[in-house]
Length: 119
Image 1 (tube, one colour):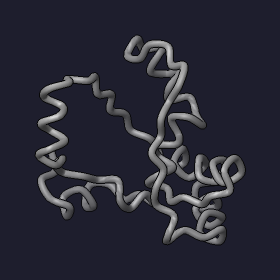
Image 2 (cartoon, helix red, strand yellow):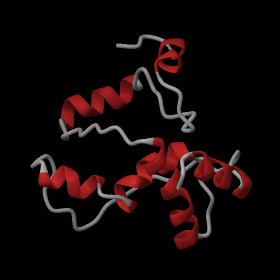
Image 3 (cartoon, rainbow, N blue to C red):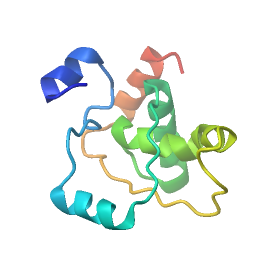
């Protein structure tokens, strides 16, 4: 298991630059211990993260980086459906996705990433 950012970046290179977090805040952890919500972790390929970005831009007129696209891919790809089929997630009638991270993305970069990933 990686223990530093250097370990994470040496293991895997991704266009999603700010996804890795090696620890959560103590307040987040304290809230988790009280509420104990289920946590589902899944890996999203760069292609899923990048392809979600223009879909979100089309729907909401807001550019986001692939790090945000990784989360959005749960909505725009089959991640939610796959987790349901695996019995890990029940019926979802509403979903909240916190969207952030568009300050360093351009249409040109999105096109470059799509081309590099053969999308």
